[in-house]
Structures are given as structure tokens and as C-alpha cells.
Image (cartoon, rainbow over all chains, first blue to last red; front, top):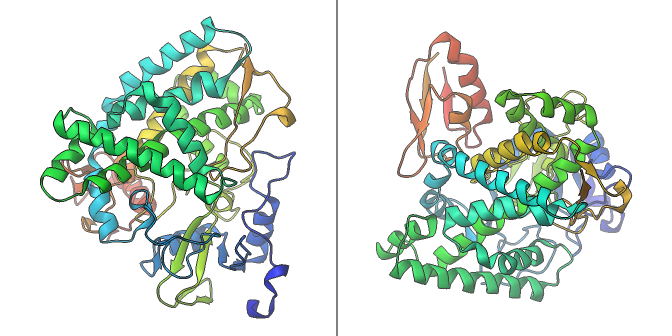
Length: 404
Length: 63
């Protein structure tokens, strides 16, 4: 049926949010979910991949071994020309078995028990940054003073990256994930970070420590990993480790300040289960990775009664999957007691976020501490004056002016 | 309830350990799932069902 529709008539993707509802996915995604099950969208380069918007279909697609994450395969819906041989940042754009081989080299440091052991150190980081915030100017930008430093300090410690270089890696990361960045800008930023990580790996080869990058140098010595692979994995973990959590902290705070009854629950509770539930609900509700999870079919297969042909692109919009009324009642309501552990904010399938245990723990510490320590925290700007990251592949706010 | 895990499929996301720490653990060397109990007690069975449901790699089978 869709073959008779001219590409120009299809909705464009990524879609735009309603300006007055900055915490909700674009209305066009809701329309696709209602009219679905599968629809087609048009990308900037004219490609017309499938759009998957319903939760059950999304999980089925992302768990199917007949879809590929390899962006160099013909039909992969990147929306832009792909330069062959361009450096792949880590294993997220690879398929098994190579994906699994590389991923397993860095999985242990993110295991639940290892992450739990870091909780007291993260609590100290959070406490110290709040002390500094309270001692500094009021109003302040929560992104700069708190949301970005917390996960940056933590991932630096875990990887073995000097925090003094945070300006450099934060700026380059921003360029890589900005949708509007030109390809050559993005390429240059990737090259900067790969060179930086390559140098660090070189230093760790000479003087290994206890950190994750030092662990990778053992793999290099054993001939299981090239130094370039190690540097690329380092870049992936560094970017994914600070940008996403920083956005969850700032955007989550903005959402809570706009839902004072929910914020009051969190502030009044001493129950770690409520804090954990709040983290899951904010992950579900905000779903900050709003560029779609992208795949290409490598064989014909059927989903929701529709045959997807080998070579066709697929975009899985997990942001609207997390608002699927078939799975989550009153999906557009922020309800911190809901504990929606089955959300797909971290994706699904073998590519599901490697650092999710770290993200959860950091957010539990932050959401469980910040609003109790600063009970009078308030936005220092109207919502329509806050610069939301409409142009980012990861959503959030560029600045969050707050007062107390 | 009988639980089996497929360590080849596991991607080490740790969701099962979070849901049912009495039944699942992760190997120290690579974070891959380890089964602590193949026949969990009644009080852990809801958590085990949740673990199987949220496992991103479909590595947990219940029978």
C-alpha cells in the first residue's frame, strides 16, 4: 500500500515537538502510533524507512536477529550519505558476533555489584557539587554547575580520564550529537576524541592503573584488541557516560519542578524504592534519546502483519513506545509511584544500554539528594524561555536557570 | 518454576540481577549472567518473571 504514496507526502523524521509540551514526544509520533501499526517516514536524504511506534512491535524488532545495526549496509536509515570506512565509534554500529566480542570486554565494570560499590563515591561527588552550588551565585545554571559535572566526574573516574580535560571532551561530544552539525564538523570532533583517547590508551599501556581503559590495555597486549578499537570504545563510553545522564538530571529536574505534587513526594520520602521508581518513571517519561533507534533488515520478516523486506530501513521510536497506552496506563502522566521497569528508554535487544546500571545509580543519588538538600529549588525562567535541545540527537536542555 | 539462562545470548545488561538478585548474578570477569537457583522459591517467582520479561536478549527461559 505504502508504495503508492509519494515520499514527499510522508511525514518527515525526526519529527518536531509541540512547543507548549516540551516533555512530550512529537504529536506526529502519537498519530503514527494510532494509525499504525507500521508507517513510513521520510528522512533528509529522501529515504523512506519504516517507523515502528508500538511497544510490543518495537521490542520484537529490536530483539530480532534479522535486523542489523551496521550503518554501512545499504538501506540503513542514517538520513545522510555514509562515508565508507569512516571511524566507527565503538560497537553500537556493529552486529554480533563482533559486537558481542567487543561489548563483553567492557561489561564487567558496569555489572550491578561493581556499580553499587561506587555509590558512596557518587554520593560524595553529588554532596560536594551541591555545597558549591549553594555557595555560588543565585540564580545559577543547573546544567553547568551540577548536571554536567556529576556524570562527567563519575565516568572520568571509571574510565581513567583526567577530569581536567572535561571542557575538551564535553565540547566535542556536543558537536557529535548535535543533529544540525555538518558532517565534516562531526567527523572532526570524532577524530579529536579518538586521538585524545588513543593518547590516553598509550599512557595506560606504559603505566596501567585500576581503571577501565587500563583494563583494555591488557586486551591489547593479549592481541585481542587493537589500540584503535580501544580508543573508539573509550570515546563511545565517554560520550554515552556523561551526555545522557546529564540530560536526564537537568530535564528531569525541569519536569519535576513543573509537577510539584510529584516533586513533593520525592522530597518527603526516605524510601529508596520510591526513589528507584522515580528514576524508572522519569526514564520512561522523558526518553531523552529522541532520534529513533535505527536498523536495516537483512532478511525478509513480518512484524505486526507487515512484511519488511531485506534492505529496508527501520526506525524504532522508543520515545513513543514508552507512551504506549496498551502498556502504560495514562502514559502522558508523570507518576513517580508507577515503577515502570519494562520501559524501553535504554532500548531493547543485545544493544540495550551497557551503562544502564551506572545511569540508574547516578540518577537515584541525584534525585534522592538534590531536592531534599535544596527544598526551595525553583526555575528562574519561564518554560518557554528555557533552551530545549530540539536539535540534539539526545534531548535535554542547554541551560536550566534555577534559583532557591 | 524451572529457570534456565543462555550465557551466549546474554548481553550483560544486568536487568535480571536488579529484578531478582537472589536468583541471578553476573560473572566477575565479563558481567554475563550466572544462575544462582534454577528452582526459585515461591516468594521470588514474580521477580523472576519480571527478570525474564525485561531481559533485552531473551536469555532467560522459564518452564
